[in-house]
Length: 591
Image (cartoon, rainbow, N blue to C red; front, side, top):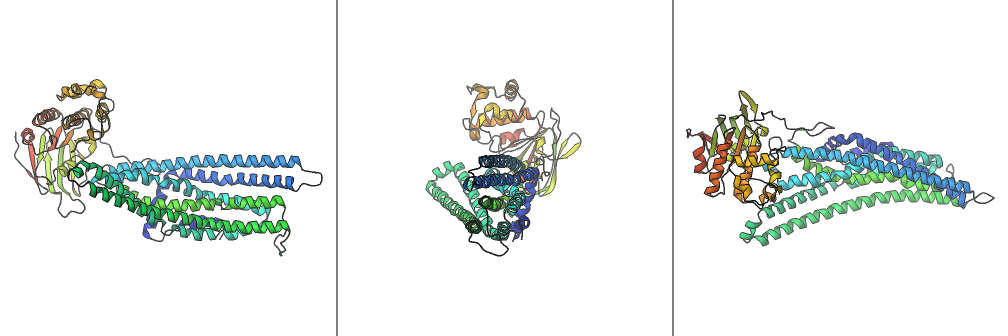
């Protein structure tokens, strides 16, 4: 086997089972996004070997002239020319490697941006995996840590496969010109590397997969504990929560140690093979220099300059293989991460290779909304792991411009029906349509303003949260929207007005103020359909009355669909849909 066979041989290693083959296919498709950059990076790294040849030749020339001078003293011109050659070679190599690293990082950045865009697209419930199936912590780990795990593979292994043939070929040619016997030793040592790289792949992917899974589990556990901290303290379950967290942390540490052991052993094994090959070359050169070698055919003498030249180039010949070995472990890590990432993005639209992730088709709507009708036809929704259906063959037609209330006991499917009507969830069976005028369109969140339960405000200022609904709105328009819903006293109660800081999950504001801001956002986001999930929950009678007044105002130019248990909100509804065990029944119009 020659060096030209290594890349293809390495490509077949580590694909012994279906999981490895699937991961390899995913990585290949994802790397195609940055393929031009990786090809350039590989070429630059391969050409950097020419710089190594130059400085090795200069070193040999300088040593020959300085340590074994001809009769008449040291040839200063040869020493200086050799030193210049060393400087030129080192500079050329440094420049090419720096350029290669920059290009490889650009390619890796393109691939990671592509994957993060697809993950975010998959997080949209109308296009990807339903939110209930992927925890916030798992999505966060995928966006940050797991996509980040691909970086060493992208910047090391992918370019190294392209650089190995070119770089090792240049070095081997130079060594062959210096001493064919050393070149033969290098060629004979080459087949040991790909076969022993198999040792690196054994168990690496499984170990890293287990570690990443443990990391996700710990992140999810910590997030759940933080969210439920007041409840845990109130129930006196703090000590039990600490013990569970410690157990998850110990499991992660154990799996991390397993990964580190594999990485250490695999690197040591490759270094041992390369060291043995270098020792054989060094022994041959030493014996030839001393004149102790007397073998047929094989050159038995060697000049000092030639000996230094081939000795310096020997580790350079194995450098691409060493880089590939390091990248091979990174490839195993990337394969494990790819399986976890793919679990989220598999159901999202596939982005075109070399381009951005596919976007959700936008639905054109007028700048001033005209109320939308909603049509649900034989809609059925099931949640994984549950025997009963959330919605069972629901057929409804909601007329434009009406206020429709969805009522029923907890767990009856009210929020599920609301999310299907909003276009936030695809039904398992049946379909949902939005109608504006006489045109029926597939239900889309672009047609909907959504206010869920609980209502979310992002960290920032009050102004920042309102601008999420309309980026081009100025302070005057924001203030007018607040006044239009009768919430003038909201700004009066906040000394900093629109500049009032808002903490995570609306910290710093009361539940009533938070709900008012959510309704103002709905007004600013001029969609033909407004969906509200329990808009008056946890509000006192005065707060509920203010919300009811705002809903009436909003209903003047849009259809309002809301879920509620409140008799006061049911009073203002034009239509009431009663849900029970996933079945919908229409009550008579209330007015």
